[in-house]
Image 1 (cartoon, rainbow, N blue to C red):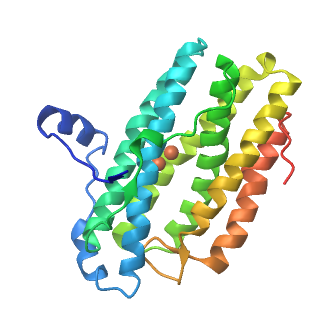
Image 2: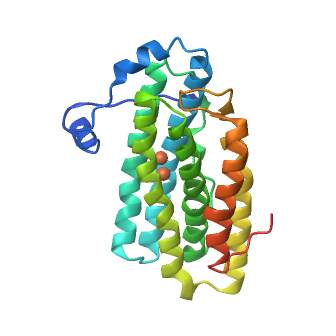
Length: 253
Ligand SMILES: [Fe+2]
Ligand SMILES: [Fe+2]
């Protein structure tokens, strides 16, 4: 275990990452008065956890990229997955900046050697399909809904940053459905059953992660539980279970 930290070398490499911000400049100074908000401490923890979960998403898309290359997936699909690694690194940075602006990140002990759960299948196509279902179809689809609610409830720069992140997450979710449609003819009935079990496990592991973020109503990117619970249920059925079932992946919850 190690304490989670983000470090940048600077120079040309940092400029390359900065270009991905598309010259967007956020009014980070707005966070200063918010650091005295009653929910600031809870928000610092939530945004520190969020930075780590974005970092873990970068690792997931790196593995998906390698998996797509190994099965000869269409190059535009593979390139998108590779590009998403950079999106997620940028999201980690943005989340960390909010935590810093609210008074500083909270020390978080993490295991960087276990960022991504290994797929249970060893067959190349099914193993990448499992990772895509878990990461894009379940994780990213649920993230989009939760972030849209959080954006609506947030003020100023916090809402702007969430808006910037959610724009990318919608594309990250879409990659999952595009992949499944491309792979449709190559997946057998038993592969689909395998993917349904993978989706079920992913839902079970994501649900408590998301609900841990719900707290007293706040404008700092946190969601009150009375908003979170119905939004999560609706997102699960409309954005995850429905689209999976329409592709023959039926999850029994
Ligand atoms: Fe992200
Ligand atoms: Fe994402």
